[in-house]
Image 1: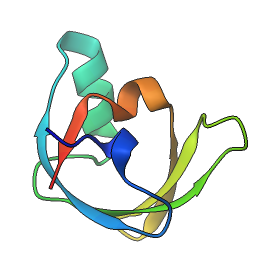
Image 2: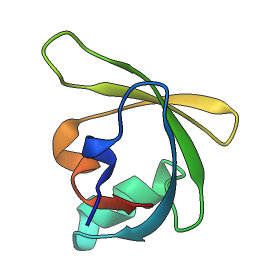
Image 3: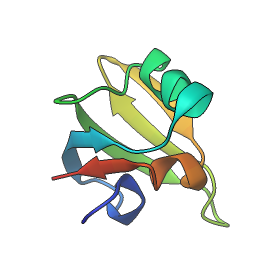
Length: 73
């Protein structure tokens, strides 16, 4: 299983499935990360957290802990 955390800078991935439950899952979905969405990893902070993504024509910063809950292909 490949998660968003494993995607390298410059690569593009498609969201396959969201893991997690309750408010955490809802927050991720509210940010626009839903099944089938294509996203690109633009940057990763020097210490590895957070990561900057492009999706749905906007930029989003996401913590690595949340990125682990997003399964991609």
